[in-house]
Image (cartoon, rainbow, N blue to C red):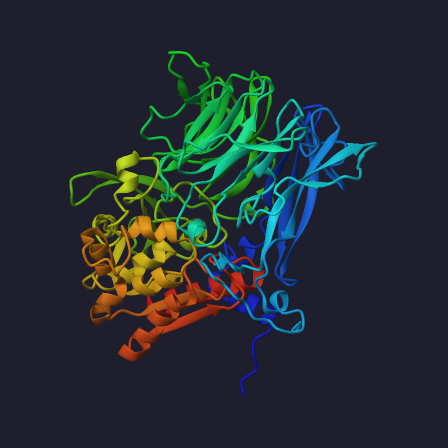
Length: 637
């Protein structure tokens, strides 16, 4: 039996493959990941954390720093206590809010039959039996209110959602932002979807609920809206802003910024068809709101005024411009904002932004030492005419020291979503700098289904996954292939999630364009996907119905576009990656595809990650992913 390589041996092998002068997977997983925690109480410092992966230990190490805004070096601190405002404590200091899991339903065999304590059975009578990467166990996250004094919580902790089989924070990604204090300290606002089981899986009708501490009553503030209502935030005057989508069941509907003063609502971004708001923060004047949104292949910072309930239209102004993404706003000091920013060559760092001019200054320099030793990759905007005569933005990322007199292999990158913006993001898996640094030109089209190009463009992917969007991909790679520096005999196609579906779909219709494919957690068979995925509102909206509705022409067309229907046309090597705990695109999708290509005799490889969900979160699994990814490309391209 062959001995397996040690981690040290693999590191040496990787170094030999990738060289030392460009970004490698090992260097990528040494970069610090910066997260702003907020301005200090004095507003003279920004406090942030840096999480640095430790591949050898398969974990991350987290440190916290305090950085003076006026200048000077960051100082590591052991605790933020007393430095940051505690938004869990009521403004008057009398109460504190928290969340905890509460057992509400008997789901397991041990719950239902006390004499069978060793049973690991589950009994379900409705859908939502599993979500993202977790099986339903009868516990629900609830919000609690307790008296607070002398710096600690006292007796009398009360579950304000007692007996309810609903979650706050929302699962799977909600946090403290889902339950907040009203400035009067008398009310708690929380976000939840008060639906259970099958009703929960087919709806996106999430609402904002206001709990009155003294009366013990709860009121739905957004009952009239049937889509998402999320991310609530008050200004000091008690005016409430939140993000809203209109249509129930459509998770990628246009997301607008709405404000209420208690007497009526105003949609601040509804007049702009091209704006889908990612997030926002109230300004210190209680009238301006700063938000960030995708636009033209980037995520930029905007501001909008709240004119109150008047006939005066809100005025939206774009503050920043450039080839970068603004990922969040973390505080305001006078005419300056502190924001997170990234681009395709740089992980997130903190910057200041002048509100009037948009001028930016870098605050943190966590990864400068690593980047100073690496060549950067040029990114270029190009516009391609699609088959229906539209102009489509395509990002092209070139290898370091790109020489147009030479020929390079190229990778068509297929974005997930399907309605997810392809901007200047910095991923620790699908990293354009890393891919280009191994000698590949990356072609990344803003195809149909991407925010930042208008609502119509964004919606044209739904109910037509195998239609125009596939033509958009091919238009992008065909246009770039005409360049003299692209080796047309060495084209690859890669992607995850909807991008993984796109890989499977293109495998059946590329007509010899591509030499190799890589699909991660991609949808292969629409029927089995419909029968095993978790969030049915997504499937119902994207497919236009279910597969047994023979009279539903839209749904029947959608299901006819399943990649599994075209396997007879597959003939190109393919690498398939599948997470074992991915309940969004479940395990049978990747396994069915691998089984098909193996039975057809097509060169193929399966990477199975039993403990990973729709993402790859552990350092060592991520390194295996990247080493196998580049080894496959080297072997087949």
